[in-house]
Amino acid sequence: MRRRRAGTLLLMFVAVLAILAGPDAIGCPNCKDGVNTADPDGLNVARGYFYSILFMLAMPFTLAGSFAAYVWREMRKQKRQAAADLATGELVTAEMQPAGAALGRTLP
Image (cartoon, rainbow, N blue to C red; front, side, top):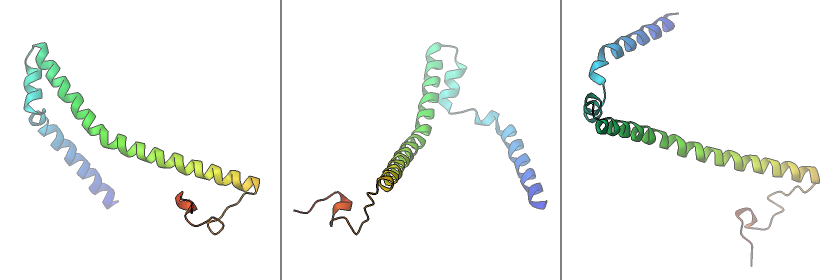
């Protein structure tokens, strides 16, 4: 109970701090100046900064997600191949393979 209350108090403190610091944390000076001016070029600059920041934030997640999807797909392919080999009776163990076959090499 005490831990939950401490978490609630911490959350409330962070929320109040965010509300009070809101006007000071409007954004970078270039974005703020671009939005304050009424000309369309300033708004386009601010919009450009916005999308470039989103792109930079998304890139690490995109790369990690792509790598994870590749690994997942390869593992799924290996499981299917193992199930197919088991169903047909072609069970090949590491001891039965020639040396280097597991690495994709063949001996001369």
